[in-house]
Image (cartoon, rainbow, N blue to C red):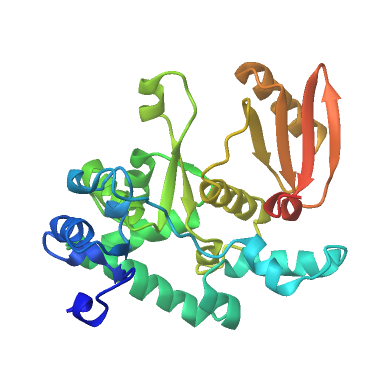
Length: 305
């Protein structure tokens, strides 16, 4: 039908939520190989990530995660002169609170934020993973949203649920968290170790797809945790970020001598000659015992300045 309308030239097809199409991998390959279409396929599930793409499509695609709007993208619309520091910090504070979803950037409305969480994330996660115990799922999700940029273990979450007189096995907890991860509500990060066994049993850190969700439960102004979450997502966004050598990255709202000592200790242990400490407004460069520390404000790091 499409070729009858456009018999010559390139044809581009844009297909959303493709994972809901039965035998979608076979059909997509047929469209690509037989019909010679240029295809853009999207979906809200990690089944479209490169590690999950069916073998029929291997070598025929480029996979990319589309994140919410970055601070750099936002500020390019709002600021013409980077000397306007006051305006930059005002925008950064708004970005930390309302994140990068376009509708929230425009309206800054808590009801729209709740609606986004309910209709886009919860509905997809609950329906597509056939979660039956919805109340327990919501309690777990509240724990997750409240503990962003913090470490957790599945057993600590199990104990948390017991405080609500809920007894649930760790296997189910893992299933629920994996469902949230699969639909990009959150990411988990393993603690660094040269031992794979230690990685598996050590506490993990939680990061949210967008810091706007931290406003739902009135977390207060824990700017340091929000900064860390933003930096984590920005590093994922910069998928080609690959320095020539190991660089230690630390995020902190403010810096003191004790914090600096901990960074130096980590640099010795990990054999890093260079580190970046991302702060709120402190900027400096230091060399201590042949170890280089670059202090840079968050806004400058986000803008690659």
